[in-house]
Image 1 (cartoon, rainbow, N blue to C red):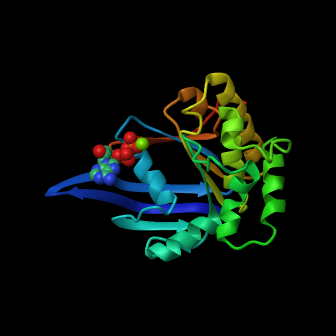
Image 2 (cartoon, helix red, strand yellow; image 1 turned 180 degrees about the vertical axis):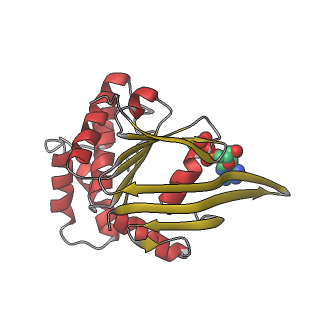
Length: 230
Ligand code: ADP
Ligand code: MG
């Protein structure tokens, strides 16, 4: 099966008191293995809600979601946590690294939770994959912002996930550093990795091969990028 994501009729309603917010109103989305997708849309359009659902951090109100062949729509929290550990790699705007911990240990963390005895070797390989083989013992405060984001990318790769999810991965970086991070994504995708990233930046989005645009909780356009930046 070549589909990593198959979402049908997904909705998510938040209830605050007696007010209902229809954050997602029926999303249909398929993503094939090896795709590189940017999710765009104005503030409040449902991007974070959709990414939380794709990332198994939240459950849909209705609809179905198959991730890498597993129907995750009905799993409980424990099972979802296991799916996250096994199948997903997360990259956040704020890097989310442990401050007093070396790059190699930060990267090895998901494998530590998974009880993998080869975690250090795999963490070093992941750091080499993002061009940080010579920085494995550095702590985050001894690294530049771009290097910290590379450590976070290495951490997202280390469990060999079916899907890499990035939420505004260049949001805290200047444009030159952001281009460097986009070059890393390009290499990862070129190596066959599936990447979905949220961005509000058209320049960043045009590194992807496909752009899905949300408005008011629905997909309003879904197109291949013809004029890619590589
Ligand atoms: P985006 O990431 O595109 O800015 P969100 O997915 O964060 O959009 O939000 C979509 C809609 O859902 C917005 O109207 C927002 O106010 C609402 N929303 C998001 N998270 C919550 C929440 N935890 N509780 C209630 N409403 C929420
Ligand atoms: Mg958001």
